[in-house]
Length: 460
Image (cartoon, rainbow, N blue to C red; front, side, top):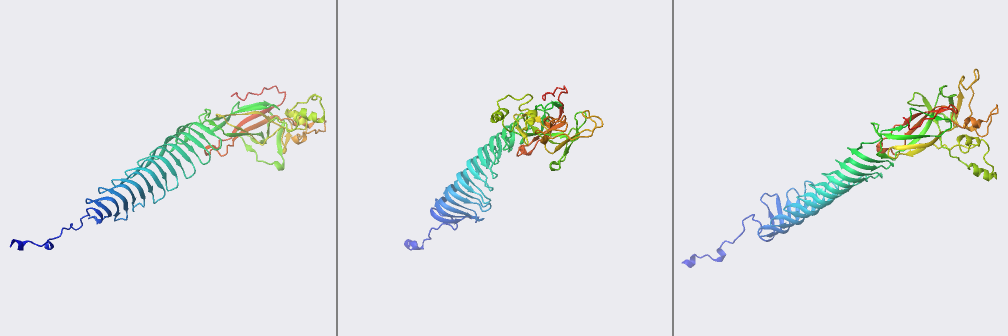
């Protein structure tokens, strides 16, 4: 009976895994109960282990190595919500270690990561093509690093939370270079800028601006500088800060000096009433801070533009000494020999530590196109005489007047009177986008033999 009660093996129920139970070992496909994850790949003792692919319901996925049910090892992850892709090391589901992150918005990162964030050493190319190589912390540039900006600028130095801060060197695409302290992405602290215009500034910076920058040009000397007729003179110039201190932190600005003559003179200082300007040399008189107008007038340097006197005599076979009254290469001597002073279009000097000096300047005879007229009744004319034209530089070379006097002597020097010296900042391009305002100096030329002593331009 007992035997009759025993069931045959064929009638015994077979052992099956409950419906929806994940595979135990080997390869298998499993959809998780929340239906958000679907895995296909290797299993070990009921856990995802080995190589496989985990798909997310939003279109994201991970494909790579698993260990004990976790995303750990080498793999590739795609995030559907951002479009970013990462290939590299993972630990517990997060990018960790070295890897490459590619951003849908543009750019990529190659280097070290921690918990999915850039951390450690790495190389980043952003969406604009700018390149950074250096240290990262919490996904930001932090520590030492170098960056190439889209405008061509290159920076190497310290970073704090994605900003240049600490000490660094910036090489600009235009050729300028800054080396020094930074704060919040701008020059701040002590630093040196070599601008591509040739200007250098070495000193204190605050919020990207030089603290000791020059704001004006000052011509040293008395309020009215007096010089003797035909005598050279020297001008000393300073760049000053807003409060009057010397801007010694700045060098390299280019200053150009030029001159003007008072358009309508005063009989107190000059025998010339005014200068008639030829039609071919017309210009608009310029206002000055001294209450009168001026027109341009050339500055000269006593440089002979031809054979030296001795050389000229040797060419002519004349070894005799200079004739009596020959004044060599003085303006009067040059004019008397039919020569001329060297009159460049402009005279320029570069500033050194806030200072510049223009040496041996001369005001020569009136240039072509400037015809001087005497006052009707001046100390130099007899009462009742007619106003007469004075000779110009063009009449100087051996000409003579009806009274027998040579015109060379009359036009060898600038006429006594009032003049203006102008100094312009012609730095190109302007330093930090700013050109300093023009400086003026009131100059008075005294007639020969007046007995007045020229003043030292350093006197204040």
